[in-house]
Length: 168
Image (tube, rainbow, N blue to C red; front, side):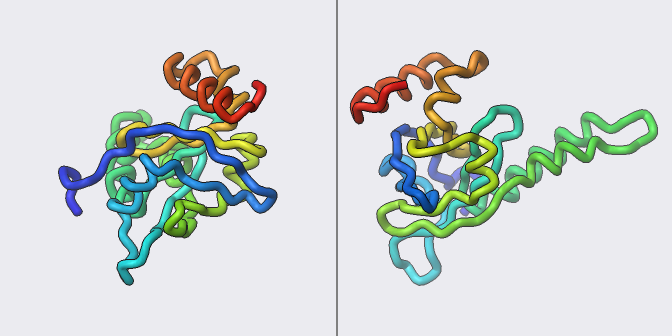
């Protein structure tokens, strides 16, 4: 599947996280994820890669095919930030490569990897937000407290929490 053929991640939703870290990807995002990472056996479900976001205290999730695209972006950025001695800034790849594969079933359920989940402070609820290339996964309270994110995304999180009776 080429870059032009990729389904884009658009949509949002709030998921309940169980004590094992299992959560369901909202249907609007799950459809794109399944299209971008179909299972070889043709069954429902697929693979999601979950890692820490390079700048925010949240998670970044995407399909396995996006790894090559992400790597090319990270390498281009690294090339622009080479030191006077020709040494690259190794932190670009360290952060960009953050990710762990997790299978998801036909209902979109997957288990969030423990370290990224802990890093993002995700407890009982996870807010999902599509950003075309990837899906961000936030702890709702962390998102609402953030000062450098889009206010519409925060409003959507508040809306979903209100719909489910979750006090922030």
